[in-house]
Amino acid sequence: MPTASTPGRSIVSRRAVIDIVRTATLGSYGVTGFSGGIVGRLLERLGSNQPGIHVSFDGGPDGEAAAVGPSSGDRAALTIDLALTVAYGLPIAEVARQVDSAVRYAIRRALGREVARLTVHVDGLRYQPGDLPATPVAQPGVRSDDLAASGTDVA
Image (cartoon, rainbow, N blue to C red):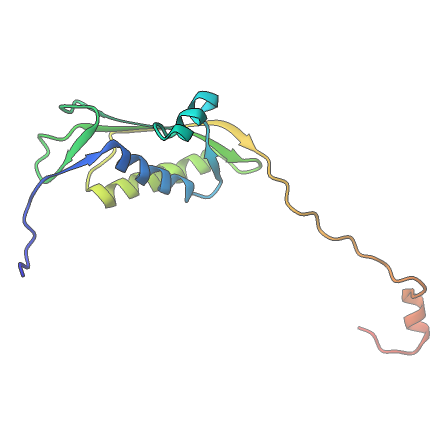
């Protein structure tokens, strides 16, 4: 079994990069989803597109795949555009910074290459009301004065 790694080359498809980007983005705090409009949602249901994520390999031999390997001469510039919805009430700039950091880290770790350009568009806010806290229900007939008058030691 060899102990040293042998340099080589592999081809990474656009779909694989989109899966890495989707996982990193949805794992970021404050991101509620991707926005892609009605056409994007329809294409997603048909399985041909991921709305809100656009990945391109600029300068490569074809736009569908990129070479990943030790030599940098055959690498195309990786460009990622994201269209997100963010949870209402969170600082949008901070959520965008976290998404940028998470996506760049995931691509670097999975593919061993840097992202040339990453653009984050926040296309909307999503308000998700939580459960309201329960209102205290007073017991009929028992008041705080009654406990004090009873001589019971209540803290």
